[in-house]
Length: 153
Image 1 (tube, helix red, strand yellow):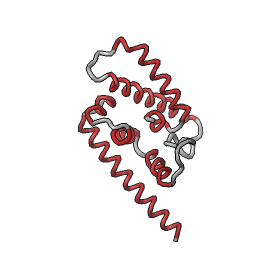
Image 2: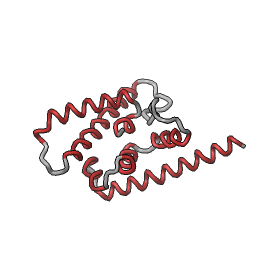
Image 3: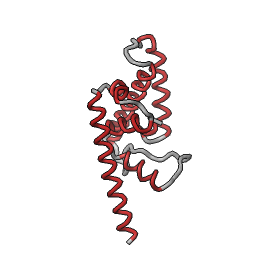
Image 4: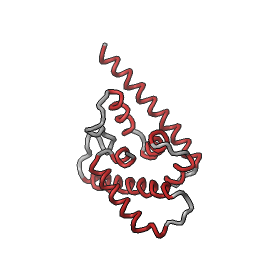
């Protein structure tokens, strides 16, 4: 779910997961035990997702920009409830670091200490990014709600 939400589509998420597993397999001997093994695995996965996003971004810099660049798209098997779709659209517009912290904290249930280790950021930065993500999501959802009311009138 992290890879899908960070990358926006099933194909890229599957590629990132496969690449992350290869990286983990190749470097498990280098794991120093300074953090929990699961934290290290998530760190490898998140970094792999960031690498893939950068790779796609460089590729698209020379091509035409898509109408919706690299956002979160609801998977076909996921409910298409309007609120879920609106939330996913808003999440797609968050800064990638804010989105990553939000997903790791609210969706995956990690604590800020663990998120800090996964993303290689201070714990206070994790808390701040979560605050910013929630504030921005609230603003976007409010605007979306007001826009829907205006169009209904």
